[in-house]
Each structure stands twice: as structure tokens, then as C-alpha cells.
Length: 83
Image 1 (tube, helix red, strand yellow):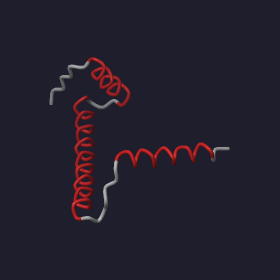
Image 2 (image 1 turned 30 degrees about the vertical axis):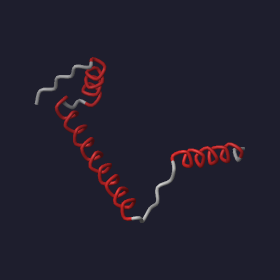
Image 3 (image 1 turned 90 degrees about the horizontal axis):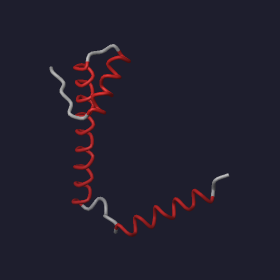
Image 4 (image 1 turned 120 degrees about the vertical axis):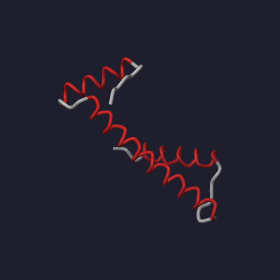
């Protein structure tokens, strides 16, 4: 496999890891792509599951403003409880 990257910073990172690990660029890119596609599969599974939960009524969506307010209150409570 030939690896041609247009982004010089990314190419430098690959070159760094080739030198650091002693592995070929092909191996590193193949491992990275394998990990990427596995993570993508997991994310899709999770999203589909969440969608199914919402569509079936097992979970009720909440308003975005309400969610933001809840997060803000949790954050404030944590700050108050810090030593």
C-alpha cells in the first residue's frame, strides 16, 4: 500500500511514529484505519440504539435548553463541593 498524505503535519506525525516504533507507514495506517472503522461501527450502533429507544418511547427526549440548564446546575454544584 502506498501512503500519500496531502497534509504535511499528518505526514510528519506518521513519519515520527514510523521512526519511533520501527513499523512501516503501511502498518501504522492500516492499524489506524482498523481502529477508526471499529470506533465508527460502535458509534453507529450506539446511535441506532438510542434512536430505537426514542422511537419506541422507552426514552423521552428533553428540550435542549432544559438539558443545558441541568448541566449548568451540575457543574455549579461540583464547583461548590470542591475542597
